[in-house]
Length: 193
Image (tube, rainbow, N blue to C red):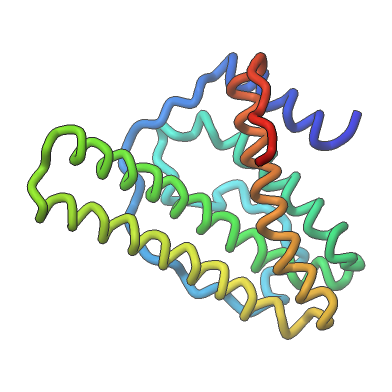
């Protein structure tokens, strides 16, 4: 079975059995500067990777780990990194993925707040504040991406650096599609326009 089919199957089973309960506030902090590449050993996971992840959200930790593993394995293959180079790049990649996940959740919450403000007829000042919150999160997401590039580019060849910029958005789009399919298994995706 192909990796994306395995991931899709896992996501479907997981979402059906555990649900995607989203409760509890997430810490609101900006992007961290990704540390020096090559530190932290061979990039093995620390079971306590994210101490900021609140307890009620832990039911999505297994799905996050599977998605991250899928992303990391595709990243290595698409950039054609040998094991030694991969060990150097992996800690920065994992840190970037974790930060993007946190900021992605925050962005979703901010968009929900913006929709609610519009729906409830909020004042212009409140709408402006919500827009600024969404925009700030978008800026922080771009900063995390830039931090990843700054951390790993010195270790990559120009060809690998170019592949990184092409592969990263493709992988993220593919993962979003797999997650969407797992949430709505009977629904077909809309045809490409």
